[in-house]
Every structure is written in structure tokens, then in C-alpha cells.
Amino acid sequence: MENPIDRYVATALRSYTVLAIVGLVIGATIAAPFAAGVVSSEPDRIAVVSIDETITGTTAQETISRLRQLRTDGSVKAVVLRISSPGGSAAASEQLYLAVKRLADEKPVVTSVGQYAASGAYYTAIPSEEIYVTPASIVGHVGVIGTAPSDGLSAQSTTGADKAHRGMTRDQYFAALESMKRAFVGAVMTERGDRLSVSRGTVAEASAYHGGRAVQTGYADEIGGLESAIAGAAEQAGLSNYRVDYYNPAQLASLASLLGANGSVSGETAPYTDRGVDSIHFLMIYGTPDGLDANTTAAREVTADA
View 1: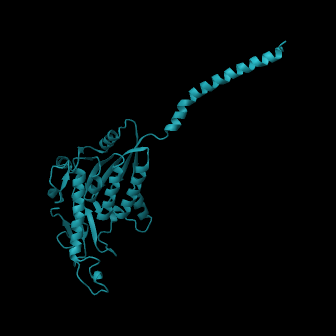
View 2: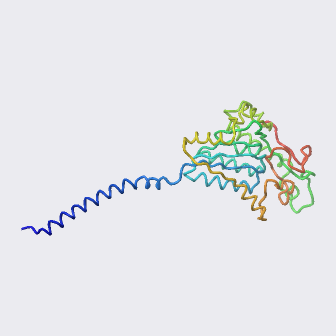
View 3: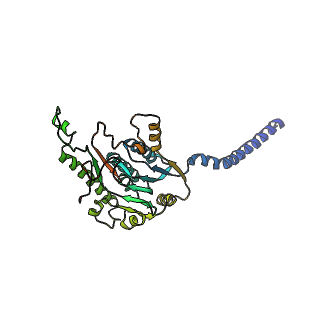
């Protein structure tokens, strides 16, 4: 004969088992949305990177480091370059161009031009999928300026032949200018040749164009401000919901300069007239560097046909 107590215990256990299963199902249903939120982590992002100072080796390296970080960040789906710079050091501008080109190979890059993206700053912008300008923006000025001592590259009493002309003969000096100019013009033709309505020779003349004319010549793509550029980047990346984050890497270099860090130079104090040990500078900059007369041998812009 079955014990009533055993029958009661068995019934109670079955009831508790059913309740436990029901509780697990309800709990899983309620928790699922929260779990999904945790898995999704960060929202898609568009990064806006400002380049708004004269380009020096220090400011370029800060920007390149930021671009590298954004390139490897999976949550960043597109990058907008917010450029308002006259250019600067030729070597630093070339490095920025290569960094932007590598970034553009992996995710959409769009440029928004403020006051200007001229010379080395335009070099930086050309790998972009689209370049937005305002009517007053200035772009272009594709050329190289070489600054050398006002007495030229004359010989002096030295311990070695190359010491007399600071590592370059006069022919080598102008050959270097020509080589850098050809590289700059070639990059413009490679990146934007199918959009340009002007010839390679015209590009090599180093003309600068304001907004509307820049779009007509193919140096830029659209008239619009930063918001238009961000919207364009979102479209390129296929985004409808996204967050926009802003970065200004060169501010770090300027702050370091104010704090007295060695080798840091703000855009307002770029030492293009203080030659120091490096007595020859090659610049991709809009206009003539302060303290130099463009009509003398101290500053020569190479504009011959490439």
C-alpha cells in the first residue's frame, strides 16, 4: 500500500519542477533584450578629425597616430577630415597623404574644407571619397617651395665637399624640388584625375581656386559645410543611426609646446625662418613663408610642366 506521505512529496516535487521551468522561460524572455544590448556594445560612429594648423612634423605625427587608431577601431565606420590649413612641411604633408590614403582603403573618408585646404593640406585631402567646400574656401596650390640661405648654396671653407653646400649642390637642390613637385602633381592626377576638368600642366601651375570654381574644375566635389560632409560620410558607409565624435590631434602638440616640450611647434610658430641645423626646408604651403622674399633665391616655387 502506497504511503500517503510519499505520494504528497512526489506531487509537490513535480509542481516545483514545473514552476522552476516556467520561471526560467519567463526570465530568459525578459533578459534577452538586455543581453542583446550588452552584446551590441558601442553604436556605429563617424569620427571628425580636425587639421586646422600649419602642418609640421609634430602636428602631422599626432594626426597620423589618431588616424591609425580610427582605422583599427571597428565601431568607427567613416571619417570626416575637417581641414582649415595652408599646408606646411613637404615631408609632413606627404606622410599625412599616405596615412589618409591607407585609411581610405579601409573605410570611407570625406573632407570638409573650412577657410582653406591648400598646398600640403590639399595633398592630405585628395584621397578622400568626396571633398566639400564652402563658397569662400580656397583649395589647390599644388606646388613646392624650397627655402635656402639668401646667399644661395655657395661654397665655403669646410672639411668635406658636401659640407660646403649643406648636403646638396645647386643642381641637386632644384632636382629635389622638381621631384617633390612631380610626386604631388602625380598624386592629384591619380586620386582625382577622372574628375578634373583641367590638364596636368594646369595642375602643375599651382593655381588655387575658391569654392564654386574648385567644384567646376574638379578640385572639390560639393558645396556644403561640415554637416553636409558628415551626412555624405554616413551615406558612403550606409549608416542611418550613428554617433559623431570629434578629435583635434594637433591641439595635443600645441599644448605640449606651451608646456615647453622639446620639438613641439604650434601652427603659429612654425620655424620656417629659423633653419637651425637643417638649413634647407621644402614646403608645401599657401603663400610665401614669413621673412622670405619670393622674388629671391630664398624661396622658389616649382611650377614647370610635370
